[in-house]
Amino acid sequence: MTVLHSAPKFASNEGVIESLSGVLGSMLVSAKEEHGEVVFTVARDQIENVLRLLRDNHEYQQLMEIAGVDYPSRPERFEVVYMLLSVTKNHRLMVKVSAAENTPVPTVTTLWPNAGWLEREVFDMYGVIFAGNPDLRRILTDYGFEGHPFRKDFPLTGYTELRYSEEDKRVVYEPVKLAQDLRQFDFMSPWEGADYVLPGDEKVAQQPAPPPVAEPKTTEKKGDSGAGGKTDAKADDKVAPGGKDGTIAGQGQGNPAPVTTDKKEPGAPDPTGDRPDRGATGGASADEGNGPAPEGS
Image (cartoon, rainbow, N blue to C red; front, side, top):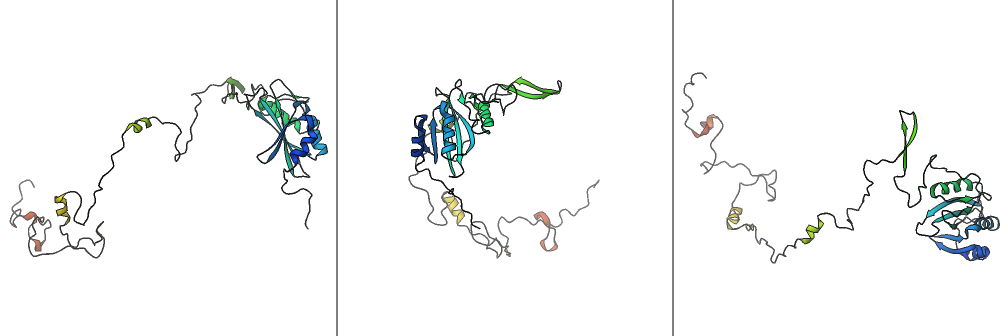
């Protein structure tokens, strides 16, 4: 059975800024569409009234999230971002307020009960105070934690560390002790390389480039090796005929096949085997080496 719903699959932002800007009036500081989302910045002391108006009159029923952002260079360094969802329109909205360390933001726990934990998280991570929150305690960090971890000026190593002490049989807190200084690793791409000069690269830059080759040395025929006349003469020497199996590397011929001739080839080695049909070994006479064995053998 087909189920029809009034909410579209994808809601458009067209006309949202114009219609809501007129409704918010003086409570609105700025409005824009960025990255496909509609963002309203409103006065901090009017945040409860703005969210109540959006919930009751414009069908943004659910508070999905409260997030914080830290901009240390601004006079009011923190931004508190409220993310709303309209179930009937299938549309999302972001509402922002600015705050400093000593300027509390009105709580919205009077509108959504889940805002209690969300405000505690922003307080724990950034130190933003929410006036009227009945239980504004840390929610993510440990008891006695110093500082707020998501602030840009919070050290990456923190201030204290905890461990379980076998001597005291309990968890103890100690100042952070690093075995070495904090290092920043540069995970550069091997294809792109670094944007800076690596140690030793300055020496390469000082070396002159090799001179260009005026005439590349080439061989016009098979006998020319490019190594001189003596080498060319050896290249023309004939070798043993090739066999049917195997290939001499680079020549496209078969491996040399043994050739039997009746004449003694100059430079041929002496026979090494003791066979009747080949005579004595070592090229010596047949009688040599056949005398009586020496004493003690």
